Image 1 (cartoon, rainbow, N blue to C red):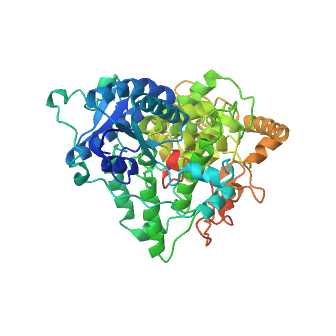
Image 2 (image 1 turned 45 degrees about the horizontal axis):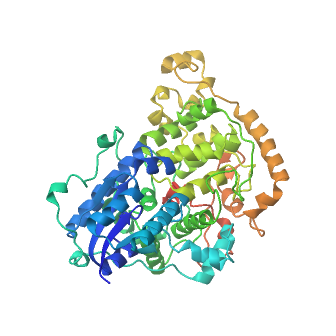
Image 3 (image 1 turned 60 degrees about the horizontal axis):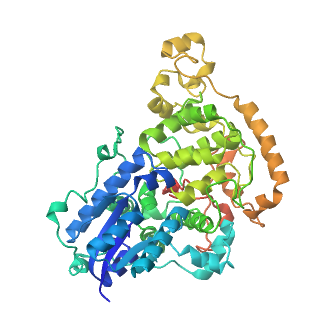
Length: 556
């Protein structure tokens, strides 16, 4: 049957490795590429802030340009997805709707509404998985109907399933030859991509990650020009206070689907197959991608994954409700320069190094403020360009020791962590210029500077920059006691996400952390096969992903 098809873009804003779009084109005589800019939905369900809005709009402009180069175009409409589809089906004589299958609850709810519309109007639907390496439903099924809750068990299931599918071919102009939508010159502006100003948003910060598939593929090519460089990358050793990310910088593009994760993964596989010296998963880039897949799998089959209450794998903790303290953390007013510099960079650039994410997450939750990880997750969701439903929530549970991570006595010190990696405080001076004139010995603890030093620096602590909001030693010791009590009382829940053989995070962390302090750990080199469970306990989440992917986000 030759359909008149609406292809609904949500994530997956690309033309390479897009099996849903490719399949829809093959069965259609006319295809309308559509993106619905449902602001109520996007800001409500996904918590979008201005940085991510800019990235999305740039990605849509790029997608439209790439489609026009193939003889098509992107139709961008504003309003409710379901209501607009009702109208477009009639206006365009549509017989089929195609869309990627997603795991997020808000997208699965939308998909049910689309299916109900299709049944009501006698339409076909066409959908494929393209945002993950595997159809995560296969992983759950292979694990007996429930998600594998430890990384070791997850890799065991993958060893049974085998390698993920290869990417499909790129969409071409030939595919659109018989599928071009009718030209409507008088409606050109009706379907155009709006600007930030059109949405009533302003953003003056520098664009470090321009949105779109074109930039994603350029970045991918840049980092694969030297296969030796990529194949020799193991656990990233860049310092968390790099002024610019010394990573692959691909996480925003993976998060929105401007870059196919299968394309990235199989390109890495090709490099590793050709290289003589390389580190294999789980500490390599491929292993970091698999962490992303792990969180997607667990999120897909865990109720209330982004919440504490009603989440069966998450410890139920009586966190403090302290809006004032939360606001100080969010607005970089904690009085700890290292923490405040990180939160300033986050707000200005939409990105922070994965270890910096760890530091501010630990500070907010179990380290110092004892505030719920859900509150921090919402801030990251708003500000991070690579914010990702599954990875963001999974990492916040991990860093707060609510699930997945069990060496809860490891606490990041908000002073020594930064000082060890950047003794001169260049990072702090860049993002907190009010402190730029302090001598290096006081840059991380300016409240200890004598009055004459503060006067000379032009910054009086308590007036021009706040005093520390807590005593870290006292707060961390108190919180350690609280966490120990919680884990004793909820031991059964804590054990759900802990490997019986070994703590899946501890082996990696003991190379990075000493009690309250970051260390320069020796790299672990695994000779095991990709999905072997013998080495997975030596890996950490792609966390805010490995810095190589900065997948959040950095696994991306």
